[in-house]
Amino acid sequence: MYDDGQDASNGRPGVIAAIPRHHTAMRILLVVLCAMACTGSWPVKTAAADVSDPGAVKWHPGHYYAPMSFMRTNPKIMAQVYRELQATPALRGLQMRVEWPELEPEEGQYDFTAIERVLAELAPHNKRLIVLLELKSFKPQVLPVPFYMASETYEGGAFPFSSYGTDAPRGNNLKLWNPAVRDRLVALIRELGKRFNGHAHFEGIGLPETAMGQPLVPVSKRDVERQYDNLLSVQQAMRAAFPNTMTYQFVNYPREMLSSFVGQMRTIGTALGGPDVFIDDPGLNFDRPNKPKGAYHFYAPLSGVVPLTPSVMQSNYENTQHDGRGRVPTIAELFAFARDRLRANYIFWTRAPNYYPKVLEFMNGLSAADGQARGLNPTCPKVYASCVE
Image 1 (cartoon, one colour):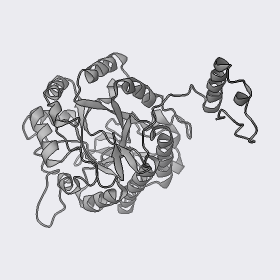
Image 2 (spheres, rainbow, N blue to C red):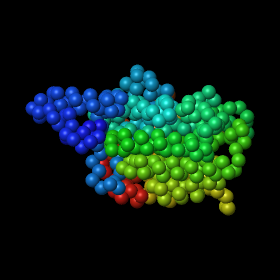
Image 3 (tube, helix red, strand yellow):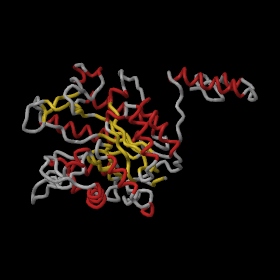
Image 4 (tube, rainbow, N blue to C red):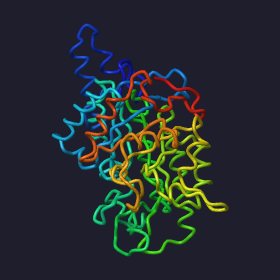
């Protein structure tokens, strides 16, 4: 884009500079028209993060509201979500799920309108946005990758999976073992970083659970290893693309790789999160001698080192175990577990039907005396050079 002084192509004085400065309206019009010509869309006004230290990270820990995927495209529901958010000081913003095909409808062509729209709603109220890139679907008919990946180069981009012990398709997961798929995901993340790393109200971005599901077509051990190696390389690229923004990874399974995987996440500076807060779940709490530990055992040792970002999903309100053999927890119990056992800096509370009124009631009961994080750990993690409010 041409600036106010010179033509970017040849160093000569630009068109805008040639207009007398007292013709303010004409100068503004030309700036807008130039932005449209260079980007193909109206320029987006973003609030720049006040980060004087290049290593400083925007840091606003606390409770975030997480509308379910179908809610984001329903204007009536979202209008209500924004009203609830404004009326609840303990909620610092939204965690929103955004699908890859929506962000890259054609190869190399990006559309970040959905993210920009939410930021525009949040910024005036000083609320913040945390994005979860949806790279795994739980509907057999939904692919989590752009349509252009339906080619041999990308091996279709995704593989169908079932629940363990069954052969009924449950959804589709990313073929991240394919280097072409990995490279396109990295390209998307870099473009997102260019657009949003400097936005003061863009708080974080992360990736969904590590569990692959049971592939309907067997996957080689080597491809499984590549899946997780490439996921770590994507996270490394995400830290580079978002140096001033919290980046996270939801981690749950397989237990055999967790120790090494989480250790490398720590080195990268990636936040440890999870898709569920299941208080009594045997798999997540697993702890037997000489056996790989469950995901929850990795939180406490990383407290104060990397950000910790558990998520409360609809099923977590319904039962304390994934298999439904537990009990129905209270909102207070879920909060206490995430705060005390998981040492959460951030909690993402799913706005689930029948449960969100209880969440809002609980949030409004939290004391402002506990700080803006409302009882969660506000400590700036050691992996960041500094944190900025």
